[in-house]
Image (cartoon, rainbow, N blue to C red; front, side, top):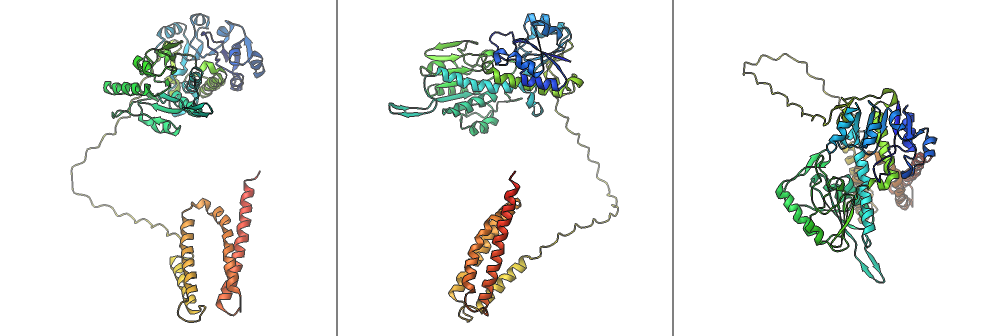
Length: 526
């Protein structure tokens, strides 16, 4: 099966649907890859790199007639539709809701069309989610473009000439692009605020170090699939008032709000632009769908009352080297799931393929059918109460085996403690039954040591008991000092015998602890 990768014909488009790295993967999948000459030149992928990867370079229209499967970034133009072989397969960004005429023309040529912008946002499809890949780059690039047009530092500066306050950035919409913009602006040192109608993104915003703005109206904007839904008129009115208040404070505004299949909602009104300080910047990431800023001109940079409004629609293309690699990787993951070259097929039972397919051999299958929630289980009618029959006798289950008790239980521990107390009272320093002050001090330390040691060990997870004991055994050196003090004098006294035993056991403990520690350290050495 031949895969064709043509040069993008959209004005200003620098991306390409395959890089030498992804071409190499496609060849490993069993595909024969054809690349149009100069297809990757604007993305810094020269033709010799494709030849080295194993691709065949072809000229112009030959790519459309020779390829069984065409991989593109942008939707094809009329000349490309006329050149494509009838019955071929095409994978690209399509936006079928806004390009019905394009879909109709491709259907006339019996094309099988898969839209990368329609890949469902489910866990299994994350590796194929090209929209997220491009949105991530667009959010990052939006901050870079804003920094270019903004005439100050992002981070605060204290210089000999005076103090420069940090830039205040407002990000509207905390999806993939919005979160990328927040991370980039925070990385440059700006004070970042963010707003989103979805309550679920609050923690994500805060984790990036931004302030999450809220409206005092209980309404959740979660629309499913990672997108927002249309909010109530009261919520929108409160939202506009909050943005108007923020306009007087912030220096840079980045808007990212989109609703699938609809024109981008107006969120940054003309009055908000006019309230911003001269030199401020608005970057509208929704410009291609009309824009979130009321004064946005898609594809253009405009200035209104000293405020620069960036309506750029090619932000991912301005990072063509990395976005081409990301997009090409998304495509290889999709073709891998579709069976590679040997088993390539359109499986309409596959949730990812069914969600992304627009045409199948010219038949329109988009939009995909909505999944109906599973029916609730029927409740069985309760039978009328009747005389309960005598239940049959069932052998009693065998009780579970009682776990073995430890060799030394709590009773043995308490008995040992009482025995030590008796020894101290009976054979104290004075030899009398009256407990000496030294004994009371030692007993207090002993009891506290037992209690603290017990709590420390049992508060640590069992997996860490060995390294904990191995390292802390060095503390046993204190026991040796105490044992040596007690062992002085005649060996016929209990205190000397106990002191000698303490020295011996503590020495074994210390030596063993260091040996175990060394063995554990060797496990982590290559």
